[in-house]
Length: 227
Image (tube, rainbow, N blue to C red; front, top):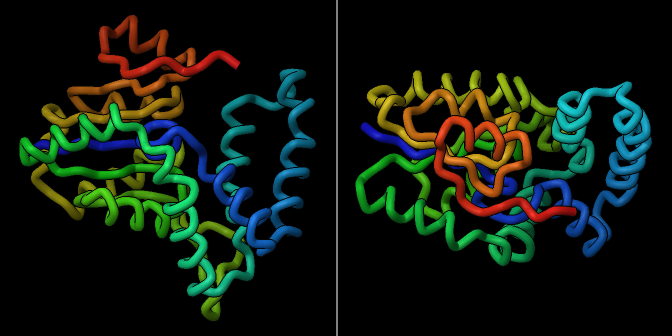
């Protein structure tokens, strides 16, 4: 069986989950205190990153791991409402048609379609259901007494953690031939996943991934805009 693994943020759509959550919280007024705590505490680390005292990988990982703070205290119905809002108002308008054409091409060939992302599993499952995915792999959220705790459960689906979670998915979905499968992603930190398959594709890659993909002769879809 051949599978096509697609990253979410920056790959399937031209956006990032944390920006979508920020837009939702500012628009609806929900959890604004936790949003500002998350944003300001992590922006405060930016000078350390620019000075070389905090590695970029560690900086990005903190942003991703602690994004769950913004959901602290939400009930499951509130979280579901928020994820639906994100799909309708932030994700769907930013879907990349050129990437979805590859998605549909894989579907037409009978390939298994899987979204693999550091974003939250409930959001990835929702997007997967809208796009007709066969499976999703994301970062799980911790729930206690019917509310989100503001922490993640298990490993962050980032870098080697993404590989770990993907391997767990593969173990429960036997028969996928990685040597014939495809992976689409935009970040150098997705390299461990890209190198798991026989057909890696860089999508609007960051400079490091673009350079690596060019050296390897990998297909490249799009160019990351220069800021």
